[in-house]
Length: 230
Length: 68
Image (cartoon, rainbow over all chains, first blue to last red; front, top):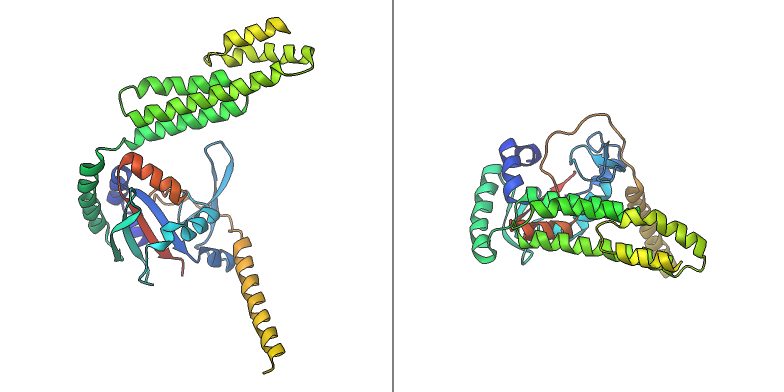
């Protein structure tokens, strides 16, 4: 079942376009504890370059993520007591559209296609996964730069993608706008901390080094005003 | 069996359960140099899966499996 569906080439291609895949795997920790050779992990890099130990047979998830998923709502759909069990779930209601013990790649694709007809009728066409990935990646880069105090780099990461997403989908534009507002808010806080500092010499030094990193935030003029007062 | 013995038996049983659970929770997987086979990309959390599925307007496919 595992390789017949989740590693099936045709299903992989289908899932990229038409589903969000969720795993509810029980008793993995037991396998790890027993040193089962199937319960091994490999080293991989996370989005921010951090090391992640991902489970070899369920790639892209850590042991903890798999355990948490099985305890989440994902673990509540199989009421048969038998495994494997496949559920096709409506994300808008979080209820099962169809569920069955086992399930072939072909059968799941047919049922997902049928579910999509109803969902598109009710909620319209969703955004493309590649566009969503592009936006999420830009937001992650922006957050990393803002956390490091480089607000100009954070804004730049968003600006590039904002231009590409113009007219694509309002929901993506909104995500980018919110991310931009979060960067400006973080920059405002950093600027306020300097303005309220009692050590003028240090505040001036900090502000001078910050000026370039405020580019694109709309706070450049305010920063220069503060600088003149110091 | 006296009430005290019963209580001790229940306490012992609970301790064994807790220790077993705790050991399973703390277990760390062995690390291999093997590379994974191409597999569907799973959502990292249920909440993230629901948000993504709404944005894409596609159904969630939940695979309920057991390791044993």
